[in-house]
Image: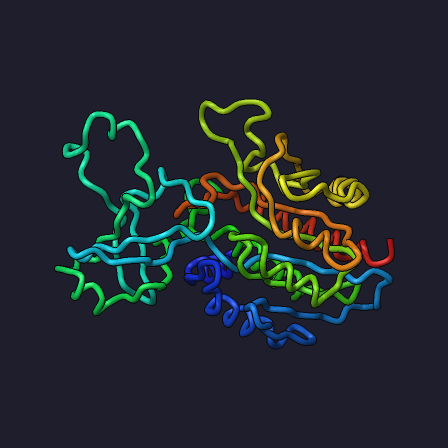
Length: 339
């Protein structure tokens, strides 16, 4: 599974440009899914026959897109202007390497610190004042290599660091995609649908379509969530803690999660000795926000990997948390068919 997380994270696929990720997922599941297709918005919709057909139609969901940028203009000097795609803090992107389109390398820059006015030095540079330098001599030269509307992805190679940590771009939510594939490989108790959704980072758009297509009764959202587990942050403001297991949410900014499924997750975790935790603050949101209000309503639960430095070129997670999310998500899928 971790080899697959590496493979999926290293594919570039910002919101609305997830086709390479979808193609890779289709290639991986073609011999294990009972059926699978890519829909008009780019979602991968798959179904696997289980040991029995359940009373409740079950959907597991993870999103394929990553935060990034899109090229919007080129200056006369050959620098590329851009807009962000998804929620990115300008503080984390200055000086970062990026790739534009398929393989044009660049770096996000602004004027050097010793050229800034005193009041500028203490502030994060606004995105509209940042530029990407691709080494072009002028606008004409730059436009030989890139086009307006090209996607821009962070360069953030997968690395295993410390005793058990991973850093990479796009762990949110390619790790979730890898977990769904891993669950699909197992013997399932029930017929199960899998949605690998697009455009989560810009408004839960792919999941809206996927939920309409599948029309589930119960949905398990496999995600990555923010952890405030860094120096100087204490108590409930840590939100979730890396290394303390899968995060089972009771509420976020889009969803109040099904209490019965929330309780079931903790019951299964205790029975199966799977490490879990819950959030200590109301924050964030995910595809559950669209799925739980689709159709006639869907009982929904989110199971997330706690991540430091989320929505940056270097998400950091603990491998034990990833495994815990995989394990509890599989247990839930095998338990909710007839509840």
